[in-house]
Image 1 (cartoon, rainbow, N blue to C red):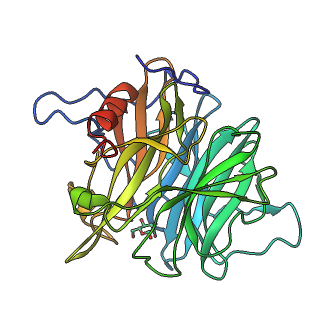
Image 2 (image 1 turned 180 degrees about the vertical axis):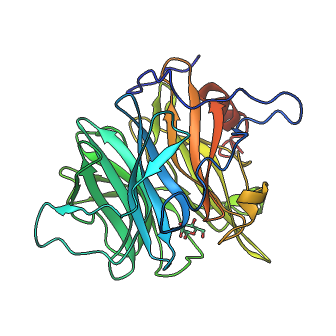
Image 3 (image 1 turned 180 degrees about the horizontal axis):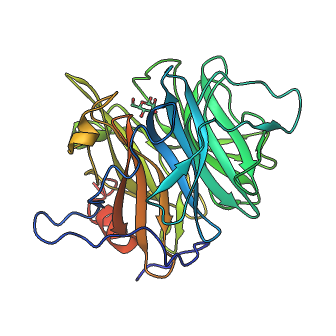
Length: 334
Ligand code: BMA
């Protein structure tokens, strides 16, 4: 591995499959047995997608978006020995309020899980008079604690950085509207205490016809990965086609000290909806990354992404190759 990773531990048991031989040499390749999580793994699930996975004890733990057969959106805890075969709870996470005055939420979806210092933080899109950012934490994936909603409605795609920046917690989010937002930029914010957020900085806007896959709106995916060259951010982008929204994803590199400043941003996508399970489902043509496992020794990556708002897919790659791709196809240079 050429690049140096920070705050990333070795993960020899990362779910992994070698790059397939023959065909087009792609930077990311799909797990041959995708979808790694089927839509009906749990008793009441209509769909399991846009979900977050982290290393935990000898194996892995996760927080999963399951929509049930009443089509209620909620988040559920799960565990796995190998990151491939999962046991997910039948009942949604019941958060313990750290303050009795904390508001209830109408729905929860699109979780991210980020380890900072001594605990796992969970962020999600929270239904509170429209979508806003929800936040909680766990120490053991058994008990989950609720914190204040960091940002007011309407907002989606909140994700924390894995360490403090300038002594503050740092977050990316995507201000939106109450519906299926036809716009969206990524914004950076800081907080000394996870309650009061400010120092808001614009990070990236959608692009025009030169990079049409990200021409309608963009949103942060998994927690940014700290490398010696900058924060590697996987993010999704949306194209408005004559048949509706199309969700693809790619990556950008953000300045280590001032993460609201992009250093490089790929013009092409890394992965777009192309297989049957990405193109056909409750919402066709969606690939939506929410988690990335990294092996600190080898730079191997395992990215979990939602497919067609129905099932969960897994894709593999190497961090060096993703960084080369982003720098080689950097649209900020033009
Ligand atoms: C977004 C979110 C995602 C979903 C996507 C495509 O607004 O609701 O959860 O994957 O739309 O439907």
